[in-house]
Image 1 (cartoon, rainbow, N blue to C red):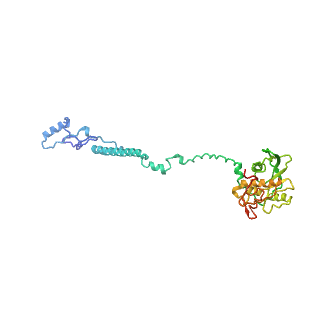
Image 2: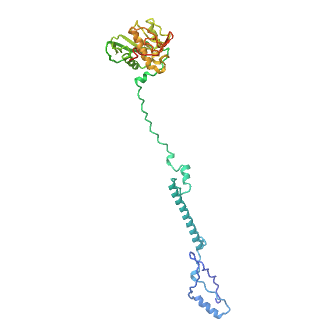
Image 3: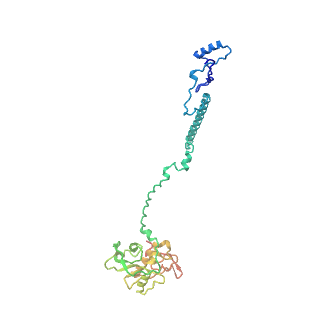
Length: 348
C-alpha cells in the first residue's frame, strides 16, 4: 500500500528510570525507514516528515495476567527523602547516646532505646518471671534457748499459789545428800515436800541447806553444822506444805496458823512446817523486793524454835528485828518499829 504509513508517536525518552535527565546529542544510525522517508520527501515535497520509531524503544505488549507496574518515582526525590531519613536517624542516635552518657555520669539508670520497655518492666508483668513464682520460704529463725535461772535469781521470784490451798497431805522426801560443811555438833535433817504442790522441791531443799549453814545463821559460831539426808533417821523433818495441810500439822501441837496463814514448828511431831503460801509469796513486812531475805528468815525462825528458842521482840526503834521475832506478822511491836532481818548473827 502506497502513501505515508501511520506510526505511533515516539515515546518520551527524556526520563529514564533511576538516572537523572540528560540531553540526547548522540546521532542515531540511519535506518531503512529514514531512507524511505527521504525518497518520499523528494517525491512529495508537501508531505511532512514523520520519523520511524526506534525499534528498541517500542515496548512489547505486556501479558494480560500480570499487574500493571506502578509509575517509577523520580530519582531525585527518592534520594532526597533517603538522605533526610538518614539524617533524622543519625540525630536520634546521637541524642540517645548523649543521654546514656549523661545518665551514666550522673549515676541514673540508662535510658531505654525501645519505647515502652520501662513501662513493661513496671506494669505488664513481663520484666520479671519471678513475680509469678512464690518467694522461697525464709529459713526458720534459730532462737537460742534461754539460759536457766540461777539459784539467786529464783530465790528473788514469787510463785503463784492459792492462799487457801489444801493439798493431798502426802509427803515425799527430796532425794539427795548434802554434807555438813562446818564444825560442831552435826544435825541431820530431811526435807519433805507435799505431793502435787507444784513448787520446786530441789530449790527449797537447797535454800534450807545454804541458809542453815551460812555463817550468819545458827551454825555461824561453830557450835553446830547441818547435814541433809533423804533416808535414815533425821532429828527433824523440814516440811513444805500447802496452807491447809500446814494448819492440820500445826494444830497437832496446839498452834493455829490459819489466822495469818503462817508457819510453825509442830514440836509434838517431827515436822517443822513451812507454809507454801508464805514461801511462794512472802509477806508485806519484807515486800516483793526482798523475797530471798524473807525465805532465809522463814527457815531460820522455824528451825530456831526446833532448837529451843522462843519469840523475841525488838526493843530499839530502827534496829534490826531479832530473827525470832514474828516478822511475818509485824515489824512494829509495842510501838517499837524495827527493820526486817533474816539472820541470827546479822553483823557477820
